Length: 329
Image (cartoon, rainbow, N blue to C red; front, side, top):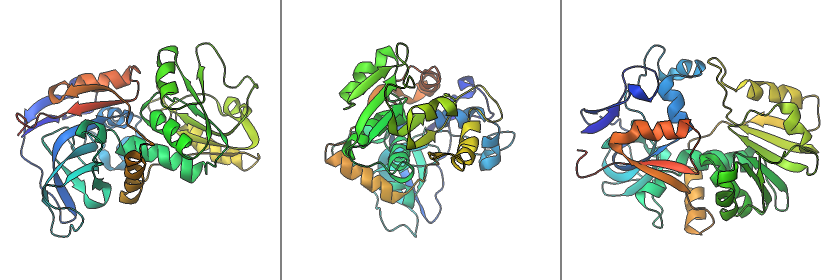
């Protein structure tokens, strides 16, 4: 089968299109014939092996253990392991797998869900990781409530576009922060107010928020706290700097410690990849409350270009790789 492979950590140049064998599934896994795969910042981290602690999390110290990148996946079940009970060959599914940038990928049964009938495969491939992160950041860590003022920094990105829609679905008053070129997108997602960070400062004291989601930003904790109410909640979703050891995650480490001495709840969120929350997302999608925002779709052979596009910060919403079912076997 055709697949994107990498033999070493590095920039997108390490990726190449190759012919490899189909993956072999375990008893609790599903073999998915991939129609589309999502691209997110996490793929870049695993491709480069940065920051270095990523390598200590079981992905390989000197070289990636999984040579085919990609996690977000949508496609049709080709085969199932003997312990799988939720799915059968022919089912259309989406979720989180291993080696999604290929004609076939493995996925644990408990990280898949039936594909919403209202979505294309390309749309469905953009849901799981970003949608789960946004859902859990708002609902579980943020404990968002109807009528609360919510500030979403990075509202035009993969997680941010879901966060805006989900916060509105939970009944919050939503303010999104993004660049000039992305203001219209964030407004179209339902944001009540949009701040163009090139012109205005969300921390100028004019507004205070019950909940702030900082998605991939690098604002200081003091600046973020200044925009919170005295008992507000800050949820940090990732963080991007050039640091090779912490890469911006130092704020996530410091935030809970600061929470011990202030009235605000400060911390980060780690996405829990689970079937139950994917069903929640599916129900919201079927109800018309959430729609994936797709910026660009690339063919499999241009996976490196798709990742570069994400790395350069151009994406408005999600980027997807479409796998050519006719020529990818």
